[in-house]
Image (cartoon, rainbow, N blue to C red; front, side, top):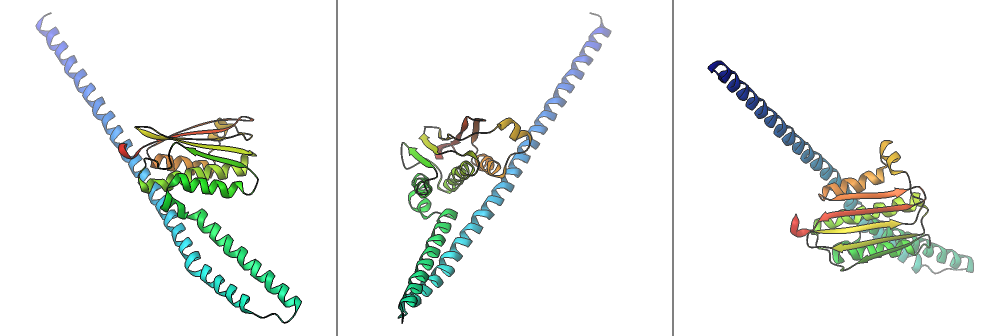
Length: 253
């Protein structure tokens, strides 16, 4: 190889090296930009979810501190009345019955928005109580099972798990026509895995994805992403719906 060929060869190598370097810099820049976008997206979703949960807490506080005591006071006043006739006594009993119903409904609404059991006993117990409340309607039989009632999860993340499953249950009740639903939790050394299955009519997931997801499913996916988790959905018309969700445990966050 003469001197000119050598110079040409070296020049080509240098150009190739520069091109490769530029490609690497460009790819790294894209990855950095993508990570930044993902981070900004998560921050935006987290801010929206935090605002929503704070609003729920405020609403529950208003129900508990304002409406509850007022209705209890009205109940005491109505109960203290002395009916002068059988009709008045019947009206008093009916009024007390309506007030009790309203108090019960306020308690139920407050518990659905922000369950006391979630703070006191953890997400598994809270979900079992939520399932029992729904089972009492006779419309569906929901079973919640877990190897332990104490999941290895960061406490602040329990509300996300609760909302994910609450949303899945609402979707099932609204769309699936199922009469059975099973929710199962498993702890591993690396993560927490939970599955949600119903025996409903299912749906065409590919078609739904192309035509934009429903709000309920979007909420589920957003919360799974907030937990740095993964979600797999298996469904088809006439097959029922299966969710499989994996999130890192407290030791791996």
